[in-house]
Length: 100
Image: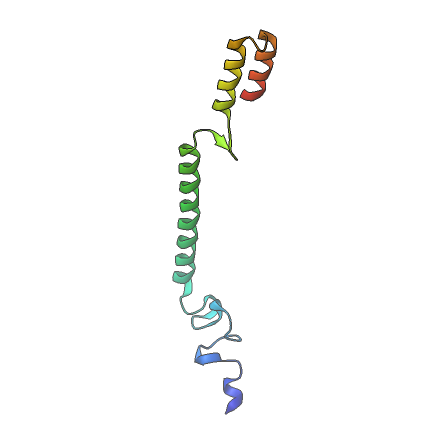
């Protein structure tokens, strides 16, 4: 009688009974295809949430990436050019580098 329950943990049938997809319902477990669908929807929602959060973060920081804001760097460059600290050629080279 004990051998009947050796691979049947908690009475949930099929296989060794340890995995989610090994219970009632054959190969797909107790929830069947519905369980797979629920998992797929869950992970799609998690990925969408992450994408929305990243989009809002980038929009809020308006072009900054890892603490470097291109607009701020361009403003500093323009100020140096306006004060005469750099010539036109150097200004254009640095501006082109920042805008790449």
